[in-house]
Image (cartoon, rainbow, N blue to C red; front, side, top):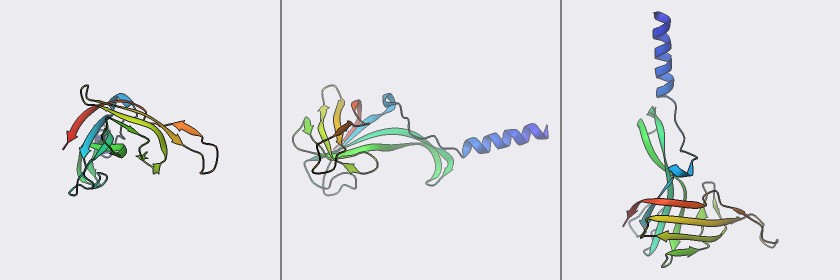
Length: 149
């Protein structure tokens, strides 16, 4: 009986202290768009006329985490500040989680169908070399979950 209770306690403690990272399945990813402005915080641009696009996913924080009590959290995987009239934004500066890399391609916002299509190639060559690219890990079509004005 004592062993069973100790195992139950250990299992509960382990489960309460383990975090679940954001999903790597793109079907679980979604987009949040937010208009820029002087009152906005990073990564949203403080410039009017910009749209901050964040590709987000949910994760699970343990029972007691760095921010207090745990539970489901939203976090962004990739983001960019889009400048222009749209709905197609060519060659945006795109933050891929590690740094802001140089990209060619486009991001298209389809308001009518509430989706965003990303088709970007990361430039991996150094300046002055023949341009070499690789597909962005963020390429795909995502549902727009929120549009914050």
